[in-house]
Image (tube, rainbow, N blue to C red):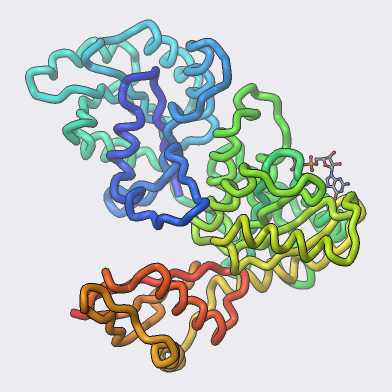
Length: 434
Ligand code: GDP
């Protein structure tokens, strides 16, 4: 998927434009306790082309002075994006800060599309001519609050998308990534995995120049570790900011089949872990929870079970994810990881026969009658699997409003009892029968 980044000084309306472009997508996201959504990265679609969108304005760069912040946000856009939208404000004209942003962007070879926001009516169009002086060719007047001009802007953006060859990996290749806060041992774990197999082919550059994937094979199965470079510390100032690491993680998750959520067994679970785990779940990827540094934990026969209970309590939304305790340092149990990844990937693309599925659903209903609301009872007519990655089921009912979260959960659990979806999330969608 191509990536588009929005840059510009504060108050030009970056997040309004971001929300306009990703629009409904954000609001249909399910509401799961413990899962927070970051509005700096999402998906958009235009002319049947999907793309990822980054609001660099949402990445606050610590205590740096104002100009330094926008400079770094522009650099992030240059690192991460295929096309850059440079946003300015027509009401205020060209400011010194706009000129600063322009100066940074002159250094990029990536296409830059200049948009002038807050041009709310045609009379204001004469205000845009000054912006040609910034030197990015055509200027696109838009109005974020009125939703004007976005079509023309996106037409232009889409024109600059590179040929999409990112996903040139074999269908059979399993793509996985490791996410987790700094110092939980992600890099060490990658080294432990690669070290024991020693079949590193080469590093393959992805669409953006900073994404480096590491392919390797084991027992006849090909794997790609997504964005291994993102784990190295590279020394640009913004790389240590939390939002930027979140952004990198979100991008890696999106390209993965399976996500390893890495926790630090020694330090235990903190709020940040929960947030990171939430991203993997929300993206609908298969998940394996890895508790690293288990060598450093003083334990008795209860320790592991207590840790498992703790994980289950904190990450209720990840109840389908298997947990593995290992040590990247001593390599204890690291060899159990790949089989778990294989399994999670298999679950992610499992299709179940419609007749068996409907038997399961009907048995479930017989066992636990459907809920009623205002005297109306939920009726379930038929279910069918409509997608994989993740497995998605449409349940045809009399009124989707009556299919509450708790009953949905119940049906999900029955489906999980009947079929082996370990490691994979599954989605249930209620539809009114036509
Ligand atoms: P990353 O930031 O998640 O990539 O973490 P690193 O791989 O750089 O590891 C952070 C620190 O934890 C380093 O000092 C590692 O040596 C240490 N570490 C990593 N894995 C283990 C482990 O399994 N056991 C112990 N005791 N230390 C580990």
